Structure formats: structure tokens, C-alpha cells
Image (cartoon, rainbow, N blue to C red; front, top):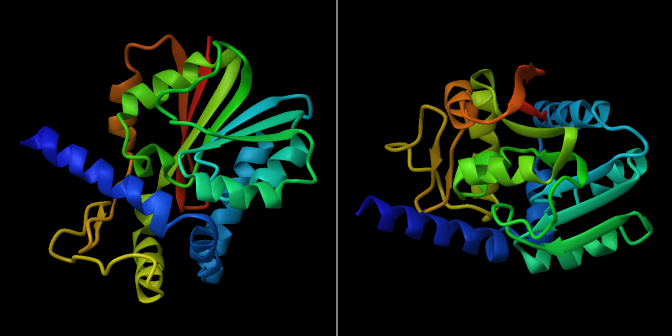
Length: 236
């Protein structure tokens, strides 16, 4: 029963990101931002850019319509963006068409079609570690697999301190018809549940550490801007 519910939830979320929240509709999500949400997004991106060197080869998981790809392309040597939504990738292709070092492809982040040890940095921000609705341990293992020795994987989720702002942002999206209305009987403790089946969870430090306990990596956890929590893995 639990397995079938998880499969249904994953199907609902895949439908959201391939249809309801793809391309220009996903872009609209990021246009509905208060000054505090914009500060959060800018701080998250700044933290990522600080970790990138000019010659690095970068992989962004869940690149969507290319919201940060141009910034990554300016900072790195080569950038690969993957997403499971073809409409978003087609839309994003227009955004990054002037960057010859930026490459987009449709791919499952939990089943990467890349060889081992080819990326300097793997990026999975804006709560992708939870929002993808894939097996989280598999997602982390795949990200580490494609890292070069000494390479870094960056995952971000939300800080508990940011709950009110996060919930208000979701309410704005619902009012704009991008999401279903929040079900407040089920929403709380870091999880937002909408009446139409959309869910958004949070990766906690304890959960993250339990997922990497048997991995040969160095890991650190940073809170940024009192809004996001970064889970950083360095491959040995």
C-alpha cells in the first residue's frame, strides 16, 4: 500500500513538472517573488557560484527552463543541464543559446547517462533533493558517481527559519493557478501538501547524514541566509 502511494505521488509530481510547471509556467513561479524570496534565491545562487572555478565542468540536476544556467556558463568551463521535462528544456535552450559551453539534455537525475568521474561540481539546488520525488539515496549515489575525485556535489533544501516565507510563496503560486491550494490539515513540519496532489517536502540534516553514512565522502552542512540549508559532499 505504501509503495503504491509513493508511485502515485511520483506520477503526480512528474506530471506537474512536465505539464503544469514546465517552461514559461515554471518561469512564472520565479517571477512571483517577494523581496525576501528574491534574497533567498540570490543567496543560494551566490553560494553555488562561490564553489565554481573557471575551468570546472559542471552538471546541474533539474535545470528547468535554465533559470541559473547563464550564470553557471559565465563562471565555469563547461556546463551540462539535465531535466525530465522536454518543454522546459526547449524553452531553456532559447535562454542559453548564446553560450557555446552550455549543453542541455533530457535525463533522469537518478539514472544519469554519464560516465564515472567526469564532473568537478554537481548542483542540485532549490530543494531538488526533495522535489524530484526520486529515491534520495540513489540520487546522491549517482551524483557522487559522476564526480571527479575531489569534486563537490551541492544539494540545497529549506531552512526551518524560512517556513513562513516559503508557505507564502506557495500560496502566491496557488492564487496564480500554478499549484493547487494548500491542504492545511496535512501541511506542516516542513511539508506542503496541495489539494491536487502536489507535495513539497524538506531534507533535514539528520536525514541527509543517514543517507551518506556508508559512503566514502566528506560532507558538510551550511545554512545560508537563514533561508536554505546546503548539503555539500566532496568525493575522496
